[in-house]
Image (cartoon, rainbow, N blue to C red; front, side, top):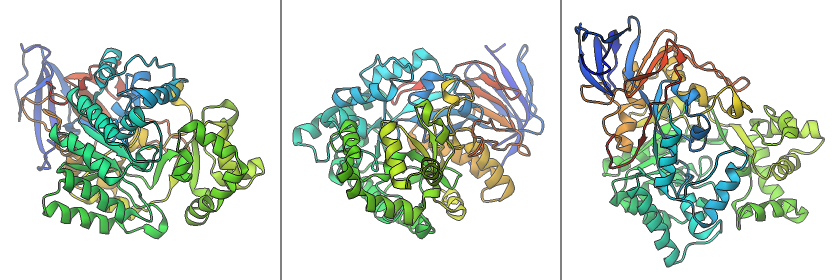
Length: 532
């Protein structure tokens, strides 16, 4: 008898490569796939899972996740693993929880002070070890955040680095890569990443390339200057000779709908001349981010405390009012930005309300209501922002080189992670693709959708031994009902698990069985260059 033998019998196997599905069985021995074939004989003593009427696929890989802190609060990874996710790539949008030096340490401590997380780590390796010791139901791979590195060396300042500062940043990135980071990410709408020049980003991306890593970017603009932002990302890839992943690709604002056809064409042209550039996408027409993105970037020069002082100054408010009212009021519409979470109980009433509704409730104009809330919450206000169109989502999703990524953190409908009204993508991204874009709309074949969730993200990041059902691969697997799988989370009621995900195996261990979490936490922290 093979150790821990498991036989999944009679499945419709979608192997992750994009090849046509076939009926068959999969045997798992220990943490790896041992055999794949038709009508396999069960090893004596093996556990048999009847997969009749179900699809067996590699476990889904969330290439764009923000579970850096929430995986410590909920090692069961409830909202992700119940979607069929078995691996998450964190450290995105320029923000990682290590390395922590200087301003980065102070900022992360402030970010996490209400969570109860004890920030004991400093180095990237120490953070990954902390996640390992805390346990996790899913595998965790992390990028190192450019914003975190810049804060560590320079703080939050609107200027370029000196040669010495740039060298220190490069050294921190190199060390993080040596300690297991899979690349570097940037968040070019967020301070301090937004203060970086293209040249600075090229220098740091070259460090990632030398170590075999990638450059993932929340690009500098996703609305009126989307084309120029994509051109910058491509230029960074071309100059640094590094693989580029454009995060959560979209065109925001009705005036920009359809621009993704231009940007996808730009990426195709770049790929034709040897630039390894691609993107990921989530299947929703609303984004989610901090309310502070409505502010001009110079407001945060000097850090959060300096920003809050500026926002209390009537003269500063009047200076920025026309900018914000033009972008948020005239172009987007105050009714298109919805408060999803706050930290103070007195402000919970605003969760689920648009900025227009908040203004009406408080008797203020929308601009004043937004800034007053930012000040009262020390800028810790999360929003859902409606601004994309369905046709663009489908177009990006259908591009052969796009992966599926949630752009969301682990959530749970209980405890501290059950508060607020987070974007439903936290619970529904992967089932929504299978339900809406495969079964209902036919935008993707089932095999192609699974490829975008498995082998494609694995190859983009460089994750070994995952993403394909094949003997010798790690047994990260998901078994789902193709006729019933669907997202259930909505913007009004987001804390709802999907349906149709019956079994999820991580390294051969059932984490979801018969649709329920088993409580197991067999996930691993995946370090670049180390055994899987």
